[in-house]
View 1: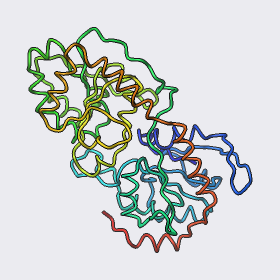
View 2 (view 1 turned 30 degrees about the horizontal axis):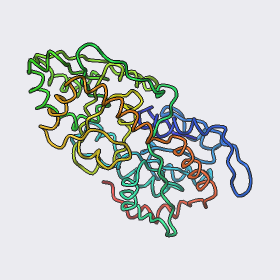
View 3 (view 1 turned 30 degrees about the vertical axis):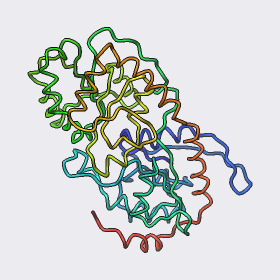
View 4 (view 1 turned 90 degrees about the horizontal axis):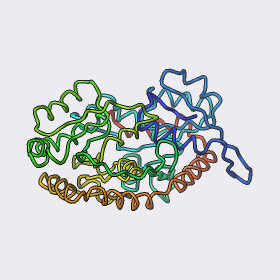
Length: 364
């Protein structure tokens, strides 16, 4: 039973996408063949109704109920829990998503979990520090399932066509990136008022919302000499269409633990469209690669170099090919099946055990 919650991007990539690809698959457990049947539950549905019929509850981040409550239900119905994390479970207060995060609850879900899945090795080590889970000891192992994409659906590879108009430099993503995008404010003002840049390029805000945070972002672009395109937010099942309006993606990340533990999903998405991505230092060392801007001046250097002789187009093709070759979606699914087999055969974690684990966690 996969928890889709409110249908966020994380739920799409970490719950819906992988579970849909294992639905109906046959795996061998203890010498017997078992067919996987997947169902989903959303935020407005009553958990008890579907949970009673499940063998495994698959969740990303916060389940949406207090940890003690889900602990009682899992124990009552004899259901295993797989807890998936694609980010560290705390944010800085300036992040617009801060109020939606319950770090204490997520830690307790980890304590309840029969199996834990994360996106990368660094995040795995981070989770180990918070949960006392150690590979090789008598604690549950942490499985790695990277945010690699399938070559199908909205993620199907589409070669980038040469754009004959002004080169479109875009920011693209959810409002949770507000602290990251603020790193570009100075560069936006400098280049946006540069006549040469205005003649050759434009800025694009791909996926604009209408809340107070997006109003703040739009204010950075008012009065510039260059053109600015505002592309409305797209539904989750077609969000990749936003990249049709962009030639180069600007993806800064604040240099903190949250950013260093993030997956390289944005690189993967751009690779499926041959769109070059410029990122910050926290992108270095991830499983996929991109252009790295070390300081504010680097952003301008990258942009001017990409504009020269339309370098953005050739580099975009090279960037896309390199990262598509580095992705292995089938391996991601195989890793997930191994995690499910481990979870299915593990002993049930009784509620008393949860109390013993949970006592080490505070509310922050």
